[in-house]
Image (cartoon, rainbow over all chains, first blue to last red; front, side, top):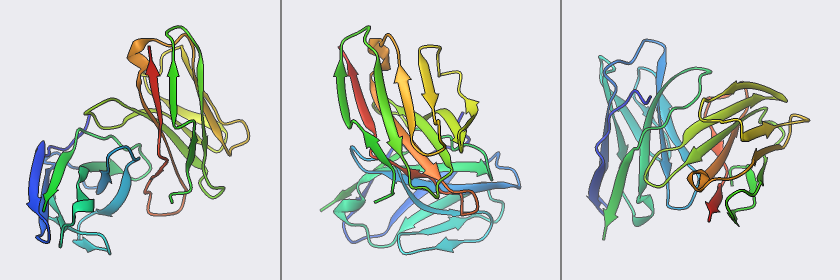
Length: 109
Length: 114
């Protein structure tokens, strides 16, 4: 079973930041937080992952709370092409990825 | 381009027929996964290979399902005696060993059982 809780859906205005929350209150010390997204009719795409520290790459930023019980994926300037289902996954290194239903993000013009 | 190719992209079959899907990862990706995804759900893990060894199988993988990776390169997933409940997207994913651990997914093979 997925160890995360995410809102079912969210809307975001084009050009604005999209902040996608994820709750993982039972996360253990050796579990990483991963984010993937899935655009309609495509396979999931890796976005970012982290353990304790905040992380940033060319796609997004990942903010992990100090107690590691929740995190937020930030898309700084959402575009229409960011409309997708976003999955938050916690995983011990080497284990399989367990996907939940994710958050359906709609970026509106 | 993730380097993971799946074939066919779409398959329509009648109940009771056998179907086979193929996945071709790049050579550096020695770990290969099969997932199944139904409408509105996230991908569900089916099975995992490291090189040619099948190391883990989900209980979702009934005895009608079989997966192989004979030379540690491409993999096949066969479904025998298909049922309407097998209709889903079958996703293949791969990764290397000593990297960030991220999975690279193919585009998927969509199965429709009539």
